[in-house]
Image (tube, rainbow, N blue to C red):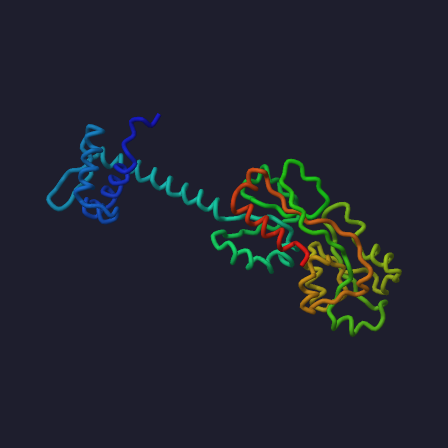
Length: 294
């Protein structure tokens, strides 16, 4: 199909000379001699059987055929350049999809360690509470999902199980004289099957009455619940995994740490083909290390 196409070197030399209007300028751009440029152009003209330039004493000008070929070659080389940049980006840009809460509270605080270990990769985060179809969405390399699975036809790396407990700032708990005065904060789960992760379930497990306030405050995103807790607005029903760093820093404190609700599992997912990419295998290896108990 492409048997009659001249050599890429000749076409690249021709494009530079046509664009710059000078064999000498083209030679400087390509880091070759003007004689080499002249030879490449002459070889191309002989191959095509037509003149491409009108030679003058100090400059060259395109013939009509040369102008037409120049436009086509310039467009083709530009498209090749863009395609090469796109392919290179595919190999170095790692796109990870996960929930907003996991990204904000667990993954982002740890990402610097991944970047320091693998500076050749640039991680791009996509946050959503909706499932990601990795077979169809070819832009996503890894999805970190929360639930029980199963995940057929995907490479699944279990990261961590979690439990839910009551958390508040030390200041709020110090001011809370009676549990009946507590303001409760929880997630209004958008996914089905989370009825067992609620204040009603936790209060039953703790054998505590519901506070006198008529309703608990509810947010659609888990990290909003945690932020409200950090602002000393009440007691948050939150994931032990997601608030672990905040508890370690003393920003949040567990209330009745003996009472926990079973949560779900975070799992890193990738297609078999994606899992073989170096950027993905490096990220999964790092994730497994970060999620392992100290």
